[in-house]
Image 1 (tube, rainbow, N blue to C red):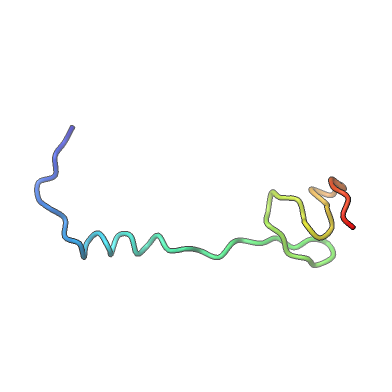
Image 2 (image 1 turned 45 degrees about the vertical axis):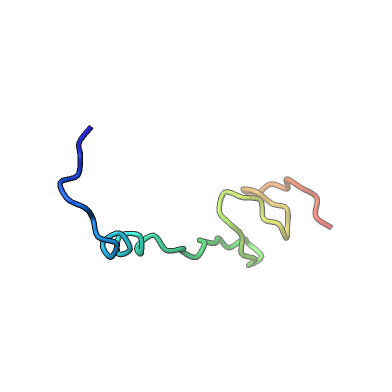
Length: 57
């Protein structure tokens, strides 16, 4: 396995890791305008891909 030629500084590591910040979740809109995570069941309506999957009170 290859070995590094020189030590990476702490600043360089922090700069690289700074790009891996948290991103806000991408949300989809349902027909009624509620926001939900894509590829998940809409928790307010219980719909998934146009079908009623769970009963919501």
